[in-house]
Image (tube, rainbow, N blue to C red):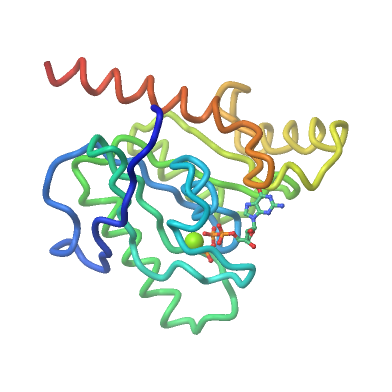
Length: 200
Ligand SMILES: Nc1nc2c(ncn2[C@@H]2O[C@H](COP(=O)(O)OP(=O)(O)OP(=O)(O)O)[C@@H](O)[C@H]2O)c(=O)[nH]1
Ligand SMILES: [Mg+2]
């Protein structure tokens, strides 16, 4: 999709606040600071539509971005950030869990992992959840610009093994130089086409 128009349509901490027009949704999950908001900005070709920060814990609500009146990108708070209080973390976890469980229009949950590191127990748990709900795994490995080619190949292999992914389920990406962006859009366009076909 060629995006010219995207805007923040709703901010939700509970179901009553989610958008009610039934567009397909793609949600982005992953640990704090992994690059969820940065990926959304790259996908909609905007520098700062979704707020980003070098400090983990920036996104604290569920943010729905309307893309070309055809779908929503859903920016979720990150998990696993030790510096926020336990009660706050539990509140975020419940918010994410409620959203993922109740949302009928959710077409895909994309898991983001840091391309440089072996996925954590939380990452594996999130992917288990994604699989258990019947979504085909789609994992974006972020920040690959921070590695050389050889290091990247090695790191991606480790991620694939650790999460039992086939190579077409893992998408290396850099928000810095936008490498990998087209492949991600292509996967989304295919999903959207399948959804449109199913509703005819
Ligand atoms: N070099 C590089 N930096 C990145 C990349 N993606 C994100 N960053 C940086 O990583 C930091 C966190 O990015 P965000 O997009 O705010 O991360 P987030 O996952 O939304 O974080 P929370 O909202 O706290 O959960 C920012 O300083 C970004 O500029 C990337 O691909 N390459
Ligand atoms: Mg964020």
